[in-house]
Length: 282
Figure (cartoon, helix red, strand yellow):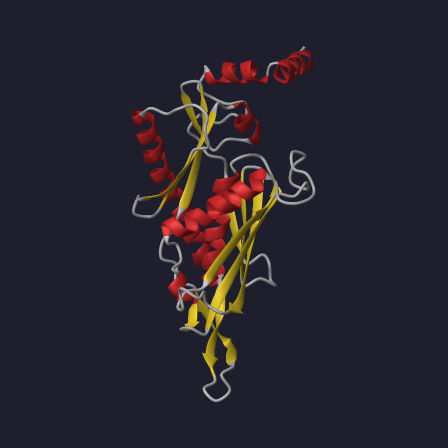
């Protein structure tokens, strides 16, 4: 009997996924057992890519992303002699989900990369001036590659978490310029961490009718009538708000989302501090 009921429920979910989902929402819960305001388990590990200057692996439920940061020398921009570069890139290979195809980056990957670039600029997580080695001559360029290994929704939250954790893991060699030769000399024995100015954390929501739900799975994103991502820093300031169309939000509900994002920031900040502390102790 139980097997038959489970089969019937599975069939209903396949034929009428939205109605199936709404029946859970009426009970203020979701098919995976979470409350509407409950996040999936989040784990962070740093230093997982030994060939990178900094790296981090983040799991948000089943969604898994890895960020590797590689630093290289470059000439500064013509119009900013004392600024380095930060180049983010998000890759969504077919390996992580059947919804993504081989070939050039699709719309989702391009949108995620642009969102990350805008967030870096708006949040001032890292000042480009801090990447200057010698004014007008040599700067650091940080290539920040994020690869999704398993996609199950809420990509942006996972990407920003992995990016921030990887930044905290970066240690660059001390560099001086020989006055006689004009060449850069690298001291690999002396490693210097980056100066993290702000700690941005993303919190994503989906809209179902009049309900707002946090940390959506891929299925929830597909069924929802709209999505919203809010990025806050440790002082509660808004760094970025991303809402690509869909249902409108009332002012009261938007403010509620901001409050939830600030509360989520405190949770992620505690997790980050714990990870950084454990790395230092080892």
